[in-house]
Image (cartoon, rainbow, N blue to C red; front, side):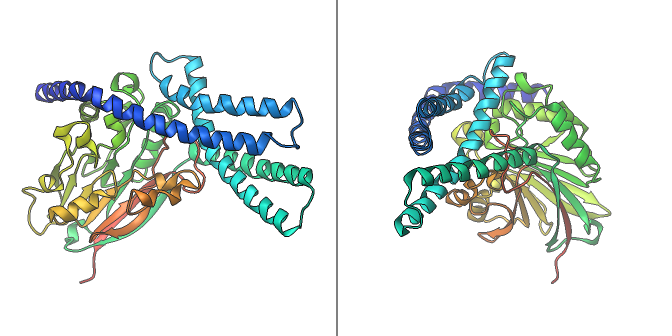
Length: 406
């Protein structure tokens, strides 16, 4: 434990030296995002409130509301640090709820504008006031129920997704082995320890052989969330509970979170592996750090080759890797992986964002083959930011391994 503490201190010093560069990159990215978001908010304000359907002063009030909601987004992010308080929680909830609702509202307004333009162009509707009121009514009728449904889904009980996965070379002693995966838990501003305990109880009720926690466990620092993640210590699996980091751990001190998770009794796989055995049959459980970890903590660069160095030949391999695109590095490293367990995408979380994930990741959700590597991409057990899920519901995956037909 002393060696682990020294390692964390060394890596923290390296992180502090890289901080100015990271802050500059972060500020540049934030500026670009806020510029885009500001433009889209202006579009919504004009389309929704600068209209004959909203006579003064209602139109002015609507525009002012849109400005305040836009400001709430950076205020919620930047104001999320510091001592917990009622005002802070209200600000964060407002910010995150609006961030998710904004995407749904924007989709509804764009759709209404396109349909309205077609109706006007074809002469079906010629009264501008009637058309504006029609669009406003449709947008409200779609957006409000969608947001309510998305909130209830996100905060509800996770769906257990059961899948049988054939694995070549699996020996009889491990036939029917069940791996239960949780991912993207995101304990933080709107998900607390009580919610996490419910997840832990649901996982334990499945009586898993192996539990895989594939990153993005938290949205906050160790000191802030230590008590909230304590339920993780109650996870139980006959062959072990394994954890790898996601990108969000590195936003809040990746090495420190590794140490805390290890203290809770989980096996942290930082570019390494373990061999588990049942009835004389063996399975390699390997894990790599997040795909982008090396940009923040160079010593944590994701290295599939190192993770499997010294692994026994001919023994099936299950690799834990937060991002699906880690399969590309697996292929480049030339190592054999029978099944990669990933998360990161949340399955898209809120419509229509699932359509943009393919710009960064090779797969959005479910079982797929990437560069010859079979990858199961988890939809996420929690959520990031907005407490909304419109489309993909929260998930706990139960993967049963069976011998593949020769």
